[in-house]
Length: 424
Image (cartoon, rainbow, N blue to C red; front, side, top):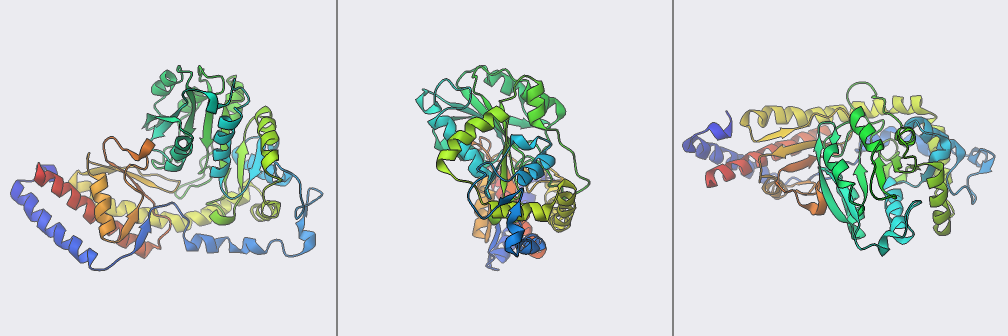
């Protein structure tokens, strides 16, 4: 029975029962972490044999290069070829970085502020105002990058097909709007795959700013945990065909394919963009870890082999997501106090409570020993205007711990909703 349909006596009785359950859970002194989309130990163990693929000095030669030495700022040719095959772009459009694609994203924005981009009239730091579009709910680390440089963050609502493109097309008429953050496949946290129409409208944008950039974070390009691999179009080609070849910077990494702490990443962009950026990066760096690049190439081999590995990851992740969704269906769906997405890939479940419940729910979770992503984190400046979105990250805990954590979450959400209704 939905809580809204209950009489006050029924709500009071339910509140007493849920409060008792909450007290029992608090008494267990749990310490469970569902705050970040970290791979679990079973996933890390799954790929640990990668550490031994380079065991002899002669193993460290690739493309005629000794990877132990200086050189190849933009990355090994074989690593570029691997990422190009996975993303669908060209090897010459790839720049290979270290374990975190976020570092490459940050560096792109930093270069825009210190030097300007390829088509900038001046460095962004010399401008009176810089605005950046933030489809929300979205990835908090993206928003913090542009916020850290002083950009004004503009919230763009997310739809079932991606960012609200009517809002985007209106916003880019302002020359102060310099870019947009995008997670186009299994978006963080909603798990949405951008539709073909949305992708094409983004590629055909006619921004007033000549140096407007699409920050295309394709973090989950091969990360299905249910069903078959979903092919995804090459945004670089689409932008080139739309007459905007230099507008997009695409990013990806092996963080959730091999090791988050020891992976490799890629920045894919037009050849002209990469030449401009490489000239700047060459002043600060000799190269990323080429030994690790070769280790990944030898282990992952190609896209087909990588997709086979991702099926093994899915065997680990699938039961965890089902544990979360089954609990929500069983405990929360009948009550009418929240709705949620049912992703088939990525690393999160996005849940919307009734307005005004997210912060209270997560405060109760913390009190009961379950740590989750902060309420509001999925919006610019950490401020969810309706205080309702909660990002659930099922990947790190073992299934038995996850079941305990989601039980706590459901009880806390019920308690927050009952408090609100009884106080009305």
